[in-house]
Each structure stands twice: as C-alpha cells, then as structure tokens.
Image 1 (cartoon, rainbow, N blue to C red):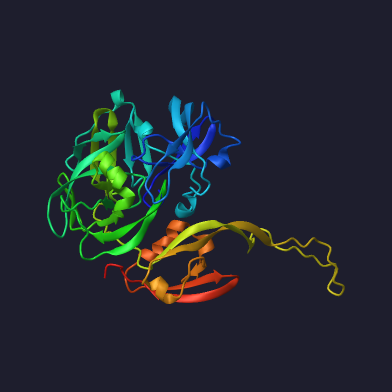
Image 2 (tube, rainbow, N blue to C red):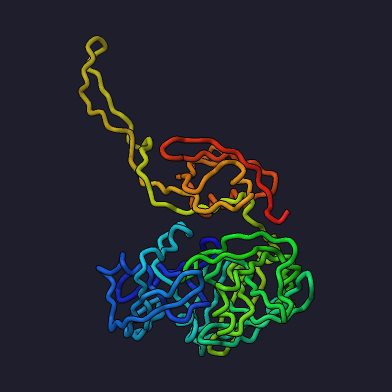
Length: 407
C-alpha cells in the first residue's frame, strides 16, 4: 500500500515485475517497457494507440498476445497486454517506488478477489470454491460492466441537493477518495468552498481540477460523511464521461475503509467496514507536492566496523594493526518539490519548484519513505514545519504554518 493504492508482484514471461492493481483498467499495461526490454519478451506484437485521462495526446504502444502471467498460484498462459513506449510515462517518482505496469480486469474476471486493506493482504479464490459468509455489518452490491470496467450505483449529498444518484467507476488505482464529473442536469456542481489543484497523472498527461468536500457519500446503508471530492477539468474527462455514462469514480481512499470482496463472475461486490471507516478526510495543508528524484551516495559511520590500532610499547608508538575505515556508503533517496499550490503556505514561505528537501523539523528526509515525508503535510492546521532544502548546491532554511486550503 502506497498513498492508498496497491502494488502486487506479477511474473510476466518469467520476469518478476511490480504492478499497480487497478480495478478501472481493462487490459494490463507495461509502461516501464524500455527498462525491461532486454529481459521481457514482447510476444506477437502489433502497433496501436492508447488513450487515457490527461491533457496530452494518445500514446503509441504495442499490443502483445499469448503471454504467461503469474500472480501467486494463479496462472494465465494466454494473456494480452499493452507495452507503452513513452519514457516520460513513469509513476515511480510520485509513488516513491519502482512500478512496472498496471493490471486490473484480467485479475478479477475469472476469480473472487478479497482485498483486506488493513492487513494488506489479497486472497484469490476459484469461484466454485468460494463461499460467502453472511455478517451483520456487511452489504452486497450489484456491479455493472462497461467495456470491462466495473460500475457501482451510489448517492451523494451536495450543497445544492441530497440523494443524487450517481454511476461510479470502482477505481482502486486512484489514490483519491471521490471524483465527480460536473453535470448541470443532475445538479452535480462544485460547492462554494473549493480550491484549484493538480489532481494527478493519467496515461495521457496531467489532470487538473477543483478540490472540495461534499456532505455525504451513500453506499447502500453505509454513509460516509464529509468525504473529499475532486471535480476534474471537464475537457479532460469529456470523452470517458460520455463513453461510459459515468458520473465519477470511487478511489482508494474510500475503498481502504472496507474489507472488499470483488466477485466479477457473479457481478457482485461485498463490503465490510474496517477500523478506517470513520477516519477523517484530510488535505495537504502545505501546498507542497513532492516526488522521489533518484538517489545519492551518503557516507555513514558503520558501528560494526571500528578502527583497530595497536601499540608496541608505551614509549614508541608503532601502528602494528590495520586502521579500518569505520564509514560505509549507502544509496539514499532524494525528494524534490515538483508542484506548489498558488497562495499556499509553501508559496508564501519562499520555497520553489526544484528545491530538494533535505530535512523536516530537523529529521533527515533521506531516512524517510515518500509516504512518511508526505504525512508531515497532512497534520493539523497550525502545525509549524521547519524545512531545510538544497537549492543549487546551497542549503537554505524555511518555515511554514500548515493551513487547510478549504479554510
């Protein structure tokens, strides 16, 4: 689990890769293709174009068929996937971990898949061996499919109207909570309290829009109060909105509040709330967006390799032993600011895009994961962050006070 999304190991034609598990994707996509090209066999390939969310153009890709995919003990000996050429299509900096591709529908279509977000565990069942156990806190939902994408009926309460029915894509590959597509006829409109933001990276480029909160999301009898919502730019989503008759999507920040059982063969979804269910929704209160930017060599003291010096007598000092270096060299991650929200605490503090964050509150970021670093930005309003950065080879210190963008 990284930033509300799931990474799983997938073996492709004998090569171990790491894939993002995305219920909103039809065919697997390998977009770390150039790195793996020496080892990964691309079988029976034909050129095609791929279109996804974002403000860019279509992607050139290869469609490869008759591949062997293995996840745990589940094996598909006739799997197709898309291999994308664009070297700029790289989600690793945003996640802080290497990721080789995306997989979705083809994992779920033949199995019953149970995702336990709290235990970070996935179980895959053959449908004929799966028996659903009734429980008081559980609910079942009917799924519909459009071009192999799963949709769920829900209701939302907005400022202007309550109980608006919406057709939502189940999108475990999105780290957000809810996306809604503005629609005047259905009275799906952004409220008066919002801010404009970068929403993320799609297959066809960056996605921008407005962020806000709504009064409630209703999934059957489950009511999730005051969830976060993003309203993506209409031009970005116009194609998928009309193509799939879709009003939005439910992402990882909603799904992680449940133990989820996806039964695609019977078009069912089972949800059981976990301890995350009532967790509050929080925004990045710094205005900083940070990404992993490679590694650097760091020299550290090695406590297990101390200098050894021996003396022949107390009057004549002769080094008869060998002085061992008590330092070791390690590769440590570096993190760089890639976006700053206008009029945010970060912008007002003087921080700039391209600054490399060295430390936060006197703690070195080289010892943090990207998730840990980002957690500082989601603390309570009023918290003060002391941020040391490397700017063009010179270290500088900045101070900012966290403030919710919706205050």
